[in-house]
Image 1 (cartoon, rainbow, N blue to C red):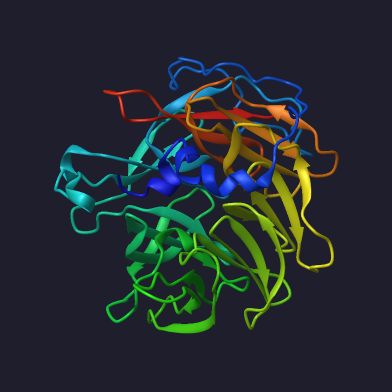
Image 2 (cartoon, rainbow, N blue to C red; image 1 turned 180 degrees about the vertical axis):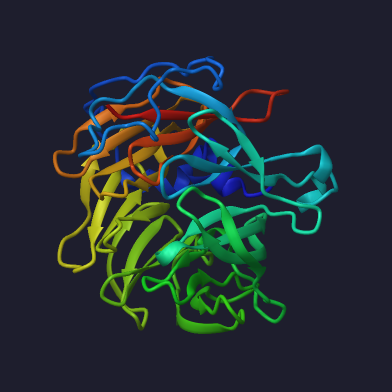
Length: 380
């Protein structure tokens, strides 16, 4: 399947051996349960939305019941919190694509009413993960089986409307990992990892205008494939692969590490949230070791996570190894308080809205209904 690392609701079987070394523990403390997803029609729902939520600190301990706003794979959020980007198959774009499967295309969906705006055209069939950068920059990363297919750069208005889009020329570039792309801290370049046929992967900077690559450093000893890279404050980098998350200097020297499969970075670029059997934090100064945010739970892993725009909370998907028992949870960094946002189910990738006042995520279903639902939980 295309983009399995981002879209699959479970990673349990693929990483069970890697996570075995991370240890077990007790059950994490929890508070409010937001409830089961509502079947309310999004066009008539009366639940408060992110567009009408009163300003002020986000009350993460007061989630509303989840509300369905449509269907499609979650691919990104608008800056103002009013819309999200989703991918879904469309009858006008049914030609075979990755691995001979129909290619999904990108739409913008409003959270208030579930209104859907198709962003793809016949001349420009937009698809891929929408990765925001400083100053309204945006890159659409389209991949197949983990490898990069196409990069599209441009800008995004606060409401998520895309403009000035153009394809980045990468004809002479080596293989690049589709899931590894992020923006540099100053927004002047993209940071990614190579996927070599043989030898070790390398972290590179990609010029979004010309597509030219500047190698930064090679990474050995992480299983031969980097799953994610990101530039941090202080000219440092985070890399993930082979069951490890490491903080590296600008020359590639390892400064600190933790067991884990993936990570998310706080908005200030000074903390790395590590995902594995638990949720832990590495600091850029490299002095402190990984500090657990939630206890490890026997038989479970954390498959995805996102940090709130205010840097106060982390939303994550806790998955049962080898099963469909997923839960979307939130933990606040200051007091490590865990809030349940869903009950047991097949839940996928969760993201904070751009204003941080809600969380959006996918719900998956058994065959033959493969198209996931898109749900939102607001706070307060």
